Length: 345
Image (cartoon, rainbow, N blue to C red; front, side, top):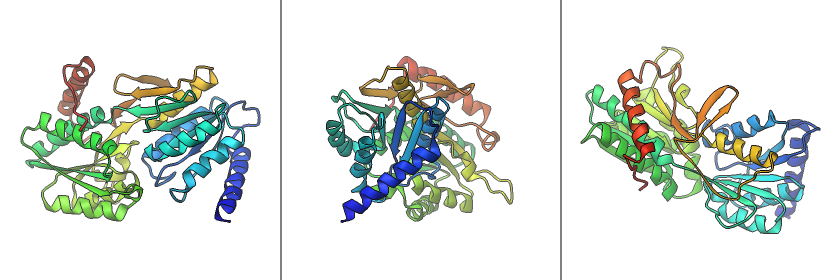
């Protein structure tokens, strides 16, 4: 009975989404199922949705589904595929098993998974990123900021304790050490289940504990959980580094004008989603594994985006110094040339 109800709800969501969210004339139909935290997390999921919105400018029809529980993922993917959509996207590595199963059932449908590794199916594109390299760059900024403020400790708050998030931590720690040898990096994770990406209360708790231990800057890679890290940072006047989307604005205190969003590590899921949809639209869909990094750039709306980068805007223009920018730029070139090998774990 529960599965039947879910099926009806998903079908209604699909029908409403097609009618309200897309043009009648669109030839290509794309469906997206979000990860834990859903749309509105101002991080990972919102980045994926932004890519979908960019693709809408190409005349692509789309719908989105926010699964309420683990069991909903496969159901959501299957419902979209069964409606004849051309491309079905699962946002997050948690979709790996579900996409493997559904892709076999619908061999004519194309699938894409963000952060999942499915290398051997002809209708699945795995979109991966060099998160450790972007994390190295923001680690440099964190180390230099701590040193400039006379502190010798920074922090890292991860969401789910899994190898993917370890890449963020490893790159960040290495970047901090590169810029400020001997600086201590505190590391904590919100949990071992998917809910660790949607727990702001835990994020704040971990951040406050790190601040009590001397952390001057905290980098989070925790999805919606990071909202709590920003709360702690603003309360205790400690700098926070965001992730995936540009989260610099989350460190802004409107009443005083103070900013504690030091920078953000931009993991351009939006770019990967957009390019995947565009390739399909152009008849160039690429199955297998695609990896996006510092050297991957694309022009969208007159602006250049990297596969991985860091954020500069009006909120952190007075926090990130020219010296920091020059150091990061120099390091970026060394990473691209292979002179610096950033650790992944």
